[in-house]
Each structure stands twice: as structure tokens, then as C-alpha cells.
Image (cartoon, rainbow, N blue to C red; front, side):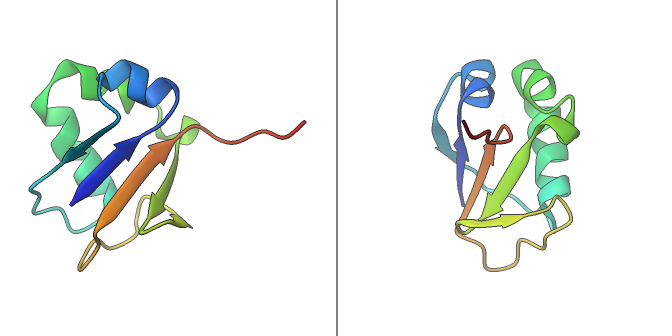
Length: 81
């Protein structure tokens, strides 16, 4: 699946996107797998309350199932002005 990173999440991880081969059942499981890979992921996902996630371009939560999902995107909360 494609995993996309935006704003400071991208800066901490160091890439804007990557293809991830995962057995994760939920977004939260995917985050745990990524955190286990390298410290840069641990830092980027250290505070999930500071992150939002979209699954196949639909705003979702971290307990969203990943069966059949093509894309997961992580980004900080958006602000208006």
C-alpha cells in the first residue's frame, strides 16, 4: 500500500511517500509496524493525538481497518485562517 506523509511528519520521516508491505489489520497496527522499523518513525508517531489520518482519501481514525486499502496518509491537524 502507498503511505503518504505530509508537513512535519514528512520532515521527520524524510520521505513524502513509500510503498509498505504490511500485515497490519488497522491503521494503529500499521503505525506500530512503522515504529518498529526505525527511530525516525518512532519520533514521527510519538504522539498520535497530534496526527490525522486519511484512508483512501477519507478522513479516518487509527482503528480503521486496512483490508483492501490502497493508500494511507498521515498529516498534522489542519487549521484555517
